[in-house]
Length: 115
Image (tube, rainbow, N blue to C red):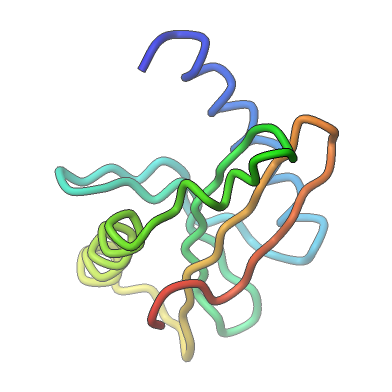
């Protein structure tokens, strides 16, 4: 990934974090990396632990379309590993996708994947 893509990715993640905070989420971690995948944001709202994949781009081709089955599987594995490593207290958990669009719009898709 080139420097420009990394910079944009960090910008998208920052905007997504601010969005989540305004919605009442507490950010627990960002950019948790494992050999098989990365968790962009780990957050909590109430008793729900939320693992968030952030995608940004043009509204003409929704960024969420870049989250395929293989990506979801890597996110699930990373989420399981995070839970094993950090033992956070929670009653429910889920995988979400946040789209940060170039027109300023932010879409929060809750409960993607098999959780």
